[in-house]
Image (cartoon, rainbow, N blue to C red; front, side, top):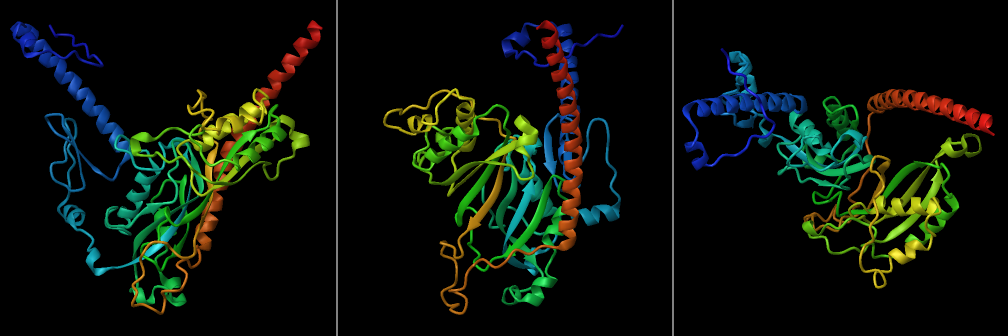
Length: 434
């Protein structure tokens, strides 16, 4: 007669005294239950980690401990054992010798749709971030040795679900040529196709658009960025766009935005001064407001030197209240008067998925102390050069975007057709009642 084991999602912790009170049969049942629970957890972890990172080697030891390793020793699980041929093992253990290569400092321009990601920056508890896939591609293609040695900076740290049409990072990449030839036109044409190499291993919704060679090795995509422009898309509906535009004009008169952001004191953010250069609500290109009426898409475009955590989402939440005529445009002045309102009022920020980092601008000369003073010949030359891209890569990018647009447009059209159908039914019902 077999014993039926019930696997609980969370087992109750027992102290040593509790265990000593159990009989032998109860202890055996407890061990069987723990073994089944442990096996279930290992199967779940093995499946999840293989889905998120097929290139990393996963170790599931007999004790149930989980470890990740790039080598080939001890790869096993309780269910399967991977067999590695001698030649395969030799190739896996061979490492790329970066000491024999050249490096160059570059800016990389990235495009990604962040709807299905947990944000741009790497996180300890999730591999589902843009940076995880980015560095996975960079290391897999041997363009960098490691993140710590790559002199890496990002222009903006977008949150969960937020996209970027123009995210820029600065990084040191492997080069074919020594430093003295890296900026000559003939050598630039023969340089690695960085975008093409990365796009072959990146997910389809993360693309490298172009790259720029930088003279100053300390030029930073974060600290040398002078303006960042974001766009937040939304349908007009019954919103009062004119009132929203009036509220936008008031944003440029203030600098302390502690009441229009999410506090980030845990990371040491105590300065809430930001300078908004422009904020406007506009109709999206190719939209016909008179034809589409409430379905016409608009966007908030806001430009500043930098932004606080959830600042744009908080601003958008207030603007939507103004557009719904639940608040007057002057509420912006009330919120940003920190002497009169020192505490942030309770309101829910707008959702994140309509937001994207649309454009970034950089200063010509970095403020970082970088150039060797002995190199008088290039000390006064601007650090920025020009963006380089491949026609084939752009063509593939357009084809990929067209495919994404087709799927999204089909879904939107199906939903809209169903919406119109039920709206007509509702009008017929109301006509009959009247």
